[in-house]
Structure formats: C-alpha cells, structure tokens
Image (cartoon, rainbow, N blue to C red; front, side, top):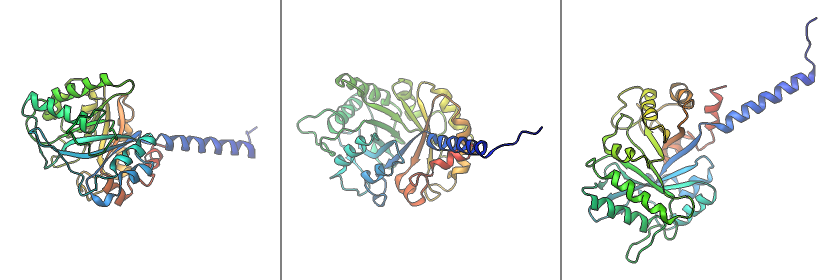
Length: 299
C-alpha cells in the first residue's frame, strides 16, 4: 500500500523548510565589514550602523603619518559628531576601527622611531590614551582598533608598528586593540608581510579588486591568503558596485558561486569586506538586507 501524506505532514514539511531557509538567511555570509569616509554622499556613520547590515565599520583614512604630520581625511565629512556616532555604533554592537594609509595619501614609516611615534599618536588621539597637546578628533570616543591599509611607501617598520600598538593592550582590563590588515589580493603583499608575520593581526581583508588585478582567479587568490594565515580570520573583500571597479565587480550570485561557496567551508573564513559604504548605498548590495540572497543561492 502506498503511503499517503495527510495535511499535517505537508504542513510539518513546509514549516521545516521555512525554518531551514530562515536559518540559512540568518547565517548569511558571516560578519560584514564596510569602509566609511570615502564619499560625503554616503551619509553619516550613524546611518551606516543603523542599517543593521554591518558588524564592523572601518573609518578611512588617517592618510598622512610617518614624518611628524598627521592628517585625517574623511572626504568632506564634518568631524564634529563622528565621536557620538562611534559611541552609537558601539552601543549597537558594531566594531569601529580607524584605517591608516589608503591610496594617494602622504605616509610612510621610514624608521623604527617613526613607527613608535605613530603608535603613540594613535593611542593618544584615537584609542584609550590621552596626552596634553594631542588633539582627539573624535573627542572622548575610542575606536576599537586599527586597520593597516598600506598601498605605498617602503615595506619596513609596519611589523614594529603592530608590536607597539599591541603593547598598549596592557592598559585594558578587558577586550583590547583589534588589529586588522587589508592587503591586495596578489599574495604576498610585500608592504604588509612583516606586520602579518608578527601573528598579531587578527583579521585580514583580502581585496579582490583594485588597480592591480589578482594574479590568479579571485577564489585561488583568496585561498592562498587563507592557507598562509590559518590563525587569522580572513575576509573576502569586494566592491559593492561596478562603478567602483567594473572589471572586479561580482553580482551576489557570482560572488557566491565563484568564491563564497568554497570560502565558507574553510575554518578561518571571516566574512565579507565591502568597498565601500557609498557604493553599497547606491547599489543596495548589502545595506538593503540582501545578504539573505547569498544564503538563498546555497539552498
């Protein structure tokens, strides 16, 4: 006799399928980091955090350092109010980091002393320190850490900068300074190799885009980074709009099938890094809540 499903069996199956789909959608692609501060039309930092789309925001950039001069470049955003926005983001559980370097800045670390001076400046101006004569652009707000986005200059002394910054953790009762790096996809990145070799960089955002295209496919390039640094959480860095880099842009479907379905199986996969908040806003790549689409492709 053939088994006949009753209405309750069909209902149960539908509920199980619904729960499975919801679970996958909730899991999504993991943590989402986004760069903010590259276009005044992207909106405020508070607005970025209020989307609920991001778990980390990287403020970009401290674009001048290494020669006794420091410059914070937020592309026309008024600095007043950013401190309160940082506190607001942190109250929602969003990690806020300051990214140093960038493209087209005036920075380098020509000596060990320059690395020490920069670490001391970052501690007093943006982290938990404070010293007379050192201005705090964000007031008493403290960023959670520092991101190394180093695209120019010599390769030396960034390892020393990482050690100097890490040493300040002794002043924290809990938590500490989060250190991240955002290298180009071609492995290795000579400018960041020393800093990464210290083992103090907890997260690596691999840029699968940029002026220099990946030596291998996006997936192969990312996997080389993941294999090289098993102790770090490695993020897949993508542009949120073809306007940012039409050659490197991947639709969410292409991103899943070309990279994420393989990357998510590795134990040190961390999530996505999005360049940047402005492109995400105009293209609704992540900020519209479409991260669930990435889970949907796996069903």
